[in-house]
Length: 360
Image (cartoon, rainbow, N blue to C red):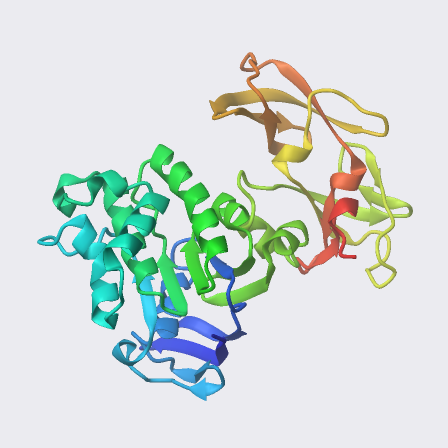
């Protein structure tokens, strides 16, 4: 199924909730809607589902105009943040309900297969209220998959689960989605979730569609500062700098040798340098540049250590693999390769991405 949003916009009163945008999620793949709260993700999904009509533009399904057509007349499966299940039906009956509506054969066998895939096979005879939050959300996901709708919309389905459950379900969902042929649209505020699910990503901010494309490409080549901020966790480090012959000069720090595009403004032009937290390291390699600072905070999360430092060019955060121990207030030098740097012009548009992130 090909869903296409053509120049759609959404106004509520005098307020723009969605500015005019066009988007065609890739058929049979996952498209992630990534953005902070109030970026417009839910408003966009409600228009895709037929729960709301756009103020401007058209919604097309296989080139057929379905703008204004209610959700009841569309073949859509939806999963929300809340655990929406039929409370009086068992887990098995919840999952089976869309299959029985279609008059499908071998329902029990298909229910068992879906339940096993989502690791709820031992709970089939229980009621939803007897399950944990994570187990209830798995039931809702299984029922949505059982509907076999060509379009499946998931609006931050893991946000109300604890960290461990989110991690487990993220990995499982990636496997489940890759095995199906439905078009999946998945809304999240978390860049890590978008990277894990892969597929395609549409970055939204304050009702604007900033960039859409293959997830890895959008992550590696954010076309603007706004995209880079939205698609970085931990946040990308940004430093003000200016262009000089042969590269970019960081105030009170080293020259970053690089060849900026000829179309960029000349020497003296203000630019913004971006450096991902994962690009910083403790040990120097050939060709590295250094940043000197003091440790403000060090915290261990999972298998990584996050170090916050103050430096001559501003505060920064480094993401280091493994467990490391630091003394608060101690001097600390971090190293990075010039080839790991992003450069944005005065308008916030991307001038240069890391050498390994350039498109082929």
